[in-house]
Length: 204
Image 1: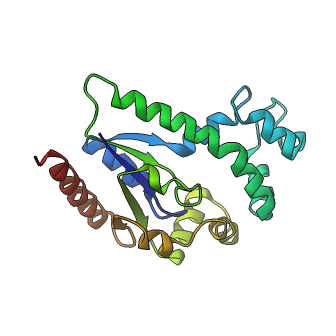
Image 2: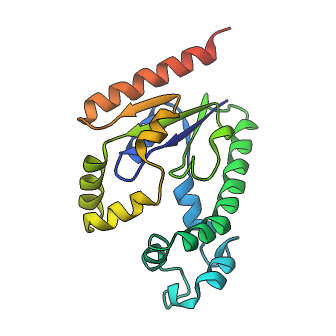
Image 3: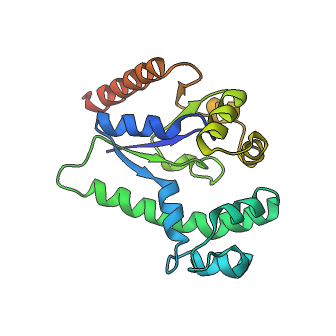
């Protein structure tokens, strides 16, 4: 079972590429979804996050107000590093558990795709057989993310500044999916890359 790390930047269309890969036969693990779960009450990172950032980041029901937390960490690099130190190990442990479970299943998929926005930032590049980066230039990505989330473009840019530049991610990738144009072209790129990958895996 091949392990693909799928990453990109805010607004590049990474999640849509992940959904297509699932349709093509990959098992997809969403690291963002896991990150949300590990900070839920009772989750492995919850107590540490609340201890570090205070009860002011909580909703009345005790759940973490993700927007309030984001406003803190995206304006304070030290706070962001503290959050990552609390959350990343828990996300990594759960991701690895799911990969192992898939590998041991009676009919494992040909590949598992881990959709992980902070793949490079979290030092996970060495965990995968291939790294795929979904690319779009910053102006396109900002416009998409602002429209999708109904938020101010400057808020999007602040989040982008907290991540590696998309050009650097693309430079380090095994496969670059250019999603700066229309979706039909992107889909064709993904299908070609998947066919090459599965063909290589099946070769003697």
